[in-house]
Length: 151
Image (cartoon, rainbow, N blue to C red; front, side, top):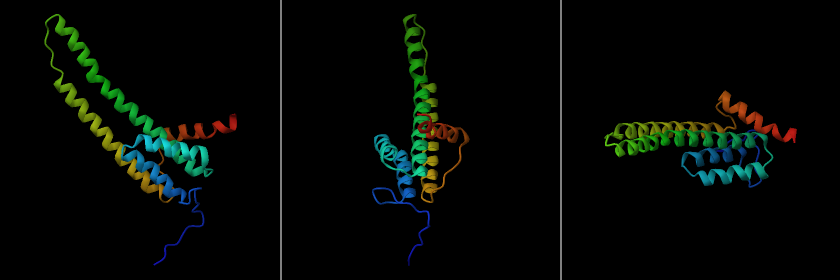
């Protein structure tokens, strides 16, 4: 059984298809390998010429950054509550932040689940050199990709 290759199935400089490489970038984001994802994104932006693959790398990097900032911001809530609790304990007022800590932990887990689902879906779409359109992210990617024209 032979698989038919599309006419526009372009290869990267390391010999694998652009769609497969895009999927690898997204799957690196799923596995939590932030360093691996950054290395792969950097390689694509520095070496590869395929415009779709470059857009894919910028989109993956932007989404990794967005999800990291969401998780960081949510993680600051218990820290702020702990700080307030420490000040209140000085004047002998007891406060218990266990509920807030558990709630923020659940929210962080939900965001991480959403991130994994999104990156898996993007990785599967990347195998066919397509994507899931997210207007805000696409606008950012367009701005980043047009930076070379303005330099």
